[in-house]
Image 1 (cartoon, rainbow, N blue to C red):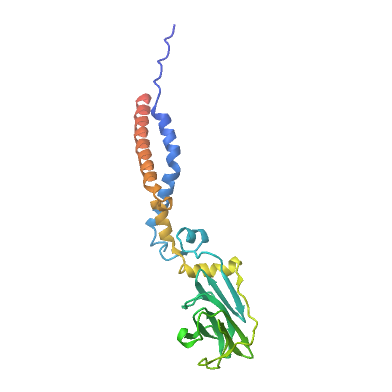
Image 2 (image 1 turned 135 degrees about the horizontal axis):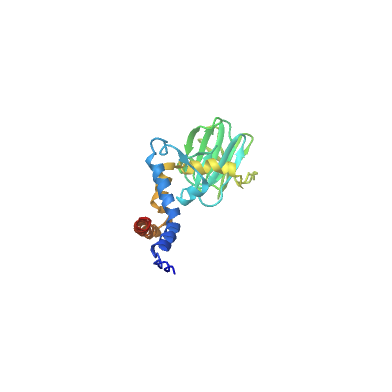
Length: 250
């Protein structure tokens, strides 16, 4: 009569090891891969490469809010987005809300509520006229008539002289204006978004924030505490299983 086999003791470490391994595999892979990338920041020039994906810029608060609007004058595009005015996708240093843009004898006049930028036909800013050189502001509209630029305020229309040194009131007249239209084309908005973000973010900055868990907000510290605790328990249960298996095979 053969003896009954010895009853094996349940290995409590094994299920814990499996559960914690499943819980920590993704966070550990995340930290390992991002750490590996950071270790080669200089080798792969991650600090020199820019990322300008819309949802990345939005996560960092580097995307203008609201809707863009603008118009085309000959081959020039004039747009406004969240208070910033762009000429041919380049930002203009000018105050006030965009009113419109019209051709004058020398080039282009970009008009805001409180200023006028005179721009050459090649797109270079020639002169900026402020409240001291303009009719009473705020300006309400702009138009062109027989080669002359007209600006409208509460008094009426004012016709600018050829040298922009004088304005003649024409309150009885009315001139057609070109309204600003919303810009919905993603291809047209992409360079504006990139310009707003000053080219985008270095790839190394995004990888560093992923590695540190900053995208998780205040929860990041607790998350990494949990991952660290699980990793420590995983190591302990792994050692226990190793010694138990070694003892059994002797």
